[in-house]
Image 1: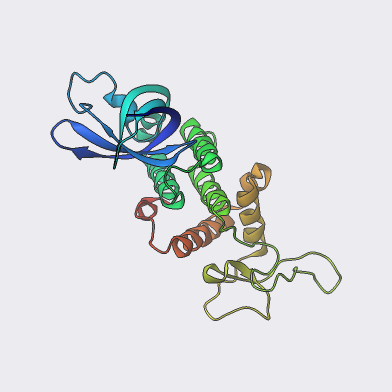
Image 2 (image 1 turned 135 degrees about the horizontal axis):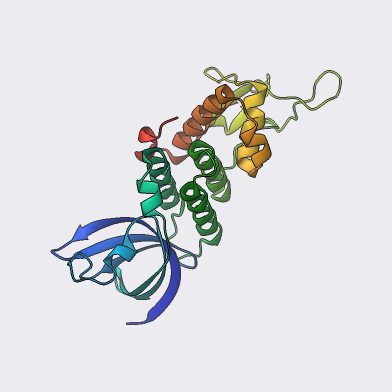
Amino acid sequence: MPLYRDEAIVLRTRKLGEADRIVTLLTREHGVVRAVAKGVRRTTSRWGSRLEPFTHVDLQLAEGRNLDTITQAETRAAYAAPLGADYDRYTAGTAMLETAERLVVEEREPARQQFTLLLGGLNAMAAGTRHQCHVLDSYLLRALAIAGYAPAFVDCAHCGRPPVTATGELGHHRWFNPSMGGVLCSTCRIPGSATPAPETLTLLGGLLSGDWSVIEAADPRHVREASGLVAAFVQWQLERGLRSLAYVER
């Protein structure tokens, strides 16, 4: 069987037979890969712990007809321990893993941007220097943008009109609707649209661009409102809700 090497993040695992596991991986060069890790559930296995969720690994795999087989695994970074010690960070990290698997739909196709974004997000989440909701919300918006679902937080998502005030200054559109792709002008607004505060829209723009000076200066009430809008946008774009997002403390 042909062999290949790749860098991967373990997204999830499930049992196979008495001693094996099927491991779902996000790889840099081959996208989402599902592979068998033989014998890793035995107590004598030398590298079973290297194939747990939240682990960044270097792998050698053998191509298979339906599932590849992992033949070598070396740990680069293990995030399970620091995340497992904090429930809020663990649930937020789990939502990130689930999102990555849902967004990378083409198996065996390079997913370099999604891989790099997830790795950076897990680094930030495990380091604990930034609030877990900030890290998660920024990751969700940026991952959706890479996948082609970038939300509009400035110009109208439907007609593209910029939010210019009567004095000619750049302002904010008043309405937001996930089904329409973001903010809406007064002409394009539809029933059921939210009316977020202007500060919330500024925060959402900062989360999408990764502007931490804007993010960390935000008022808690705007953070809560932004998190609710991010969750609604993600749920709409993915069609089926993220199961893990329901456990994230907002």
